[in-house]
Length: 288
Length: 279
Image 1 (tube, chains in turn purple, yellow):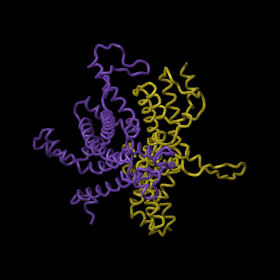
Image 2 (tube, rainbow over the protein chains, first blue to last red):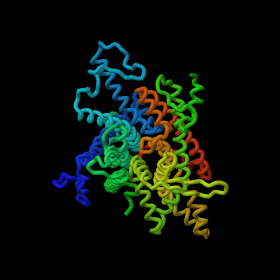
Image 3 (cartoon, rainbow over the protein chains, first blue to last red):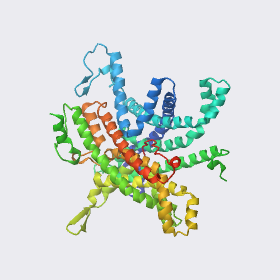
Image 4 (cartoon, rainbow over the protein chains, first blue to last red):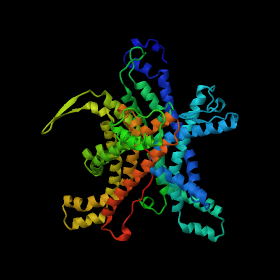
């Protein structure tokens, strides 16, 4: 990056360091922090949508829909979520390829599952083998994002379901007394009132979402964990910047990054909750 | 090969007994069930010891956080913040890489009959290194729970103790401690379940599964890779975890009942099991 970095082996001290931390690979490392932030900002609304759908479905008067909703919300309780993170991307990938195979190559009659192989015609591959590198990256990231949305959607759904149940029944009865339709009661009374009950659970989820982002590494995305291992590993003399095993220090940087992120979120969330508590008939609202 | 044969071959595979090679081709449902079940031994091992040691350390930390002495207060706060504010996944990586660069030492410990050489090399192995991380992690989370419960002990109760002239020691033993435990127990049950689920992260971080001795999810991902079919091994893991989660709820619920038995029927709180969250 700097002009004096041409001959890295002759450098020492701060000069060496300034060159070392600006190598192209380190630039990719810094970009991957951005990937984490992008993931959080996309996964949060996606989880909200999944959760909302789940909560509404489990309140539905249609029995089959209610069972699907309840099953979705309950499933996450007994099983470690990492199982879902491993399962969903492969399962989705195979489901997409299976559907495309059926649609695009109906002339192929051979079974898709042949023993230990999953074979689809080349036109059904996702992404196509001719696609460029970034398409593969985006596809991998999207599958990971969907997994996050699905898992955190179930968490969010539980929180929203609880919040909807916490709205006092008498409020809804007032709507009924005025002859509101069920959907109008939902939109005008239940929905606006539930947020105050949902807030503690949602802010808790936000912190958990932040702390779940390193799992991207398991899904094969080149995220901060990947780069920390890559850059920190022992570099012998054949590299421009040889150094011993520095992975522990790279992970120390990640620890500090996450601590800062959670600390920042916590102080913002505390502010929001004290703002929303003003005037509420609760301990927090009456204090001071 | 009968399923019984598979059980004797692979039942203790995760500990290194039985057949050395993992099944490679023609993987049967029985093999998946047995091997993944064998891996559960590690999950139970990590959860059991981390919770056992963590319980006492968590109480120490909670008392430290509640203390007015800066010497106790600040380190406890820092410890809790460090382990609750960062992802467990990163903690595993950091700890493993730190243990790897530690100097390789051996310390002899004289026991009555034999001498045991405690080596720092052990820290890089999952059975000790990962256990330490899980132990610290659960201590921090549980400390926050106990601290909250400690703050929630009713001042009326402690005032009653004061008016009877209890010494602080007696007040703590008879009033604060049992009340704190009773109040914290439902949340602590959740923490135990989280920790149990968090043990699945161990072999996905730096800690190597030596000679393919791994936990349940290690074998499940092995099968998913070999058969390219995720629809069988992962539901099996799910099945095992639901089963063991129910057992944990049963044990903790039994303790909860005992902690609450002096209360009138309407004041008794049943365990409310909340979500399992990743950390």
